[in-house]
Amino acid sequence: MDRLPCGIYFENYKQDMAVVQTRARWTLTILFLMLLFCVPFFASERILSIMNNMAIVLIAVQGLNILTGASGQISLGQSAFMAVGAYTSAYIVGECEMSFWIGLICGGLFAGVIGLLFGLPSLRVKGFYLILVTLAAQFILVGFLPYQLVDITGGAVGLDAPEPELLGLTIGTEKSFYFLIVGLAVLFSFAVKNLLRTRLGRAFIAIRDNDLAASVMGISLYRYKLIAFFLGCMCAGFAGALFAHYTGHVDAGFFTLDHSIFYIGIIIVGGLGSAAGAVMGTVFLCLLNELTMEMAPLIGEAMPIFSRSALASLSLIIPGLVIILFLIFEPRGLYHRWLIIKAYFQFWPYAH
Image 1 (cartoon, rainbow, N blue to C red):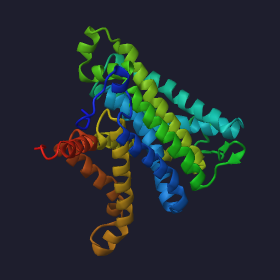
Image 2: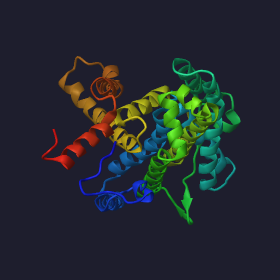
Image 3: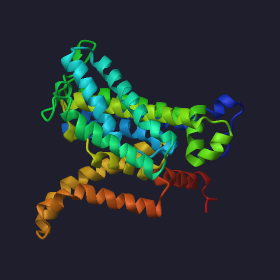
Image 4: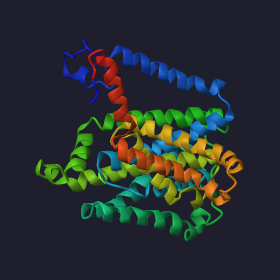
């Protein structure tokens, strides 16, 4: 639970429910947003590329945070629903020659609808069996359909996704994409943080903690599980649509099971059910992944006993080890550790 500094108290419910509750937090929030805005003016193309990719991952992870972190419906198909959004937007914008924004919205909504279909079994099964259902989504949506619906998906070749346009200006550089993608990632994170504080979010958490008790309290398990699937997959669809137009091309090879597992690892490392935790987990694991890929050639030169395939697998092995360590030593994630550290300094010198 987040704590307030000594001397800070609220006189009404509106103050207590505010997203940003103190002047200090408002100041830090504004400074952080200003820093994000200024990054493109002094960062290199490489750094902007990393941040753009992290922002796309963050949008998908925030959706998984709703589905798995808040409502407890474990999914290994988040990458597949990204593929749905990517193909949909690329087809609408590229083949139908419609607006990027229409493609983006349709990509998110269509992924949400497809997520509803795969969420229907959650009304009857959960746990390991639900994992198998979402795993089937990965195989069907990525491994099968793209190679059958060749007229729509382009088959093994894939589809080209045109550069988006905003107010008549083409968005085609890392800098211009940064403002679009990071801006949307901030909006999605803010929306998820608010969602988890609403009646809907509390219903999700009740189902996650004890679905039988939630049902006895009058919470419709069918309704809220399907809503969770729709919202979680919709976020993945938006992320996939952005990814398609950012890279300029989409094919099934971009959306693998490894990515879905990686997204699960992010919410574990960051902290389940926390929008801020999703941000922390995304930044931590994505940067770790980038660092691993940069260090792999140096490790190969220093230790020739490792084969090329082993070095190529380091980007999977090291994040996997980190996830295992978090499950053992800090299962509640980075956000919980951050709250402990913050509380220590707030209560100092009385902290213990």
